[in-house]
Image 1: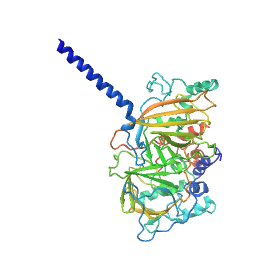
Image 2: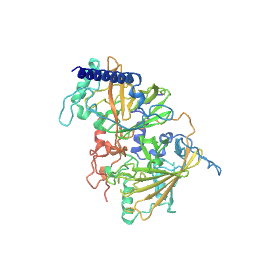
Image 3: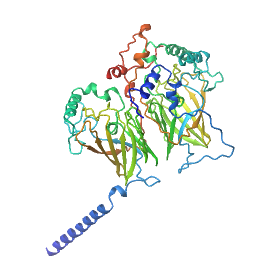
Length: 310
Length: 257
């Protein structure tokens, strides 16, 4: 095996991210393993294994089995049509929003207008800051990272660690009842605090910055975001996931997404390095200053130095 | 007087006995085996949040202060890095151009061992077969697998491929499969894609760890060389890694209304 960092997977990932379809092509399907079938729920009475310290054992490599992509969370025909156009017919069928039943994000009036603006911009952003932050190499945020990529869970006393393959994201989740960080500390991935409720790991995620998006088309939130994740092991090889998303500054009500994860059965599986920022050309390739009405410039920002670097 | 001398001599003798007893204790049971916490499988417990406190991030070698740069002692064992003549010239060129040429200026993944002594904390998550090294700087990660082989190579990775074994109480990590795009510090010390790093992590007490790294690169150096430094456990009771997203600072991200 010979992989050149400038010639293959890393570069491909950066390019695919740059053209906005990273989550739909095989390069991402490799990350986390190939099997896409949903393992069964265990029979009633099944007792999950435990760690030496008593935690339910959910260690292993897992990946999503719902054909959900990070393109758009919403159940909208317009979104679907655009996804099919971009991917040449690979329509994702997964629709993660289960509440409200419309499958739509319950924006307030002002935030719906902003979301529409960002959706329109995703087909031709006039300014770097209107691009999907992930396309630019920035971190995914929570829960978006759970849609993006396979991950490994490691458990140690007082802590659950999520190692995500895409972009070497990680989350350290203390389960020792410590309080959240000071509210002034804002993070791309938020601040996670976990606790076990039966077979469910409940994670309360706060301290989000307002720069991450939920998907590639501009679904957004404020620093008031609070995400409550529930990771329930329902069989030896299956975790059912839901996240309640609450942000009173942006939404009219809390809303909920659901997904399912299956265990990667390949005993030899290891995550590979996924360098996303290095060589990223999103601003150069995706911003369209020719239609700009503002002060857009492709020479602004960190990407200019990366462009000049090689 | 005689009584005085007797008491003084006795005190000297007792003192000497105590000293020799202390020396004997130190020789037979070094502090590193006495006080090192261990995991359930009996290995030294390396888990926790650690950080280097030195100036290697600026320059591995001894250097005087510059504006904004603290002076520092060399962490290179023996003091000098044994560059081949062409590489010594390249290092000087790197130094002259360091403000723009340093890969850190572009926020790239910094490679090994550089990530270890950058001025940010890192966390070790330890399981018997795998240690995850998580770094605050650009959320870099390394998966260090115990008792397995490197994959067929060569692979150009920024952080390399890490495989570990225990030698007594020392975790020895063998790292290969690097690209040639990272430096060792902000002073232009560099390597090629033939870089081979052998790291040694040894707990020396409840809050300290010795870090050693041997660096081999036959394209660049005349012989293997080593660095050595202590790592310190962060003492804050609620310490946790935060984020330093190097490339995400330079612009306003808010979209137009």
